[in-house]
Length: 263
Image (cartoon, rainbow, N blue to C red; front, side):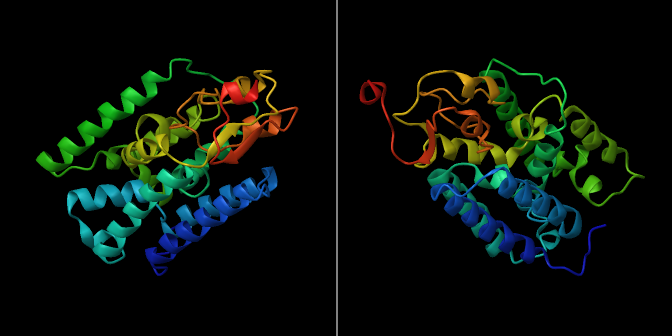
């Protein structure tokens, strides 16, 4: 389904524009469920039509040195990868949440109404992905093998049903209605960098002075990041906490409201 005649640069340009639009809408309080669905659908279509902006895969391509597969100048690809780490440091994981086709497809599937599996131990997903990240780097540098190939990312979006790896990614999608973003939270190597940057991001979904500690946000947060003191490194800005809040007690803001201020 991927149209090879469309340059991947188009996908990179979309990634930058879409991410900045999402940040602006969040800052102005104009981001809602309908807007979120639009970005999720459009970004997913970009994945199937252009195979971009697949920054995790492009990150792997650069690590492997297969620069001919980038579909863009190497310098530009590196600048884009660094730019999104900087954006995560400033604004959180808007790219992961609504722009990366791998993530948006999982997000759409998670909306299927079914019983959800919550991993209450927040350390386990982060630790598992870090171990995978180390293995990803070591295997790439020592054996020139990209582990994302075996996860079927490219084969799935190219609809290569003849490849066994296509069904590996399909299996991850089958899990996705029950377990929130299994690829993003356990396997994405580029996501490790964005999560580390997001820990110190200035703008986050934070509780404000209206918060009544009803704990409804914590009940709906799929990554257990809705607590007042949580780092938000695994916050995908899904806004479930904000939508369920009965007192408008959550803002996307750079202003920290301490417990003392609330009191």
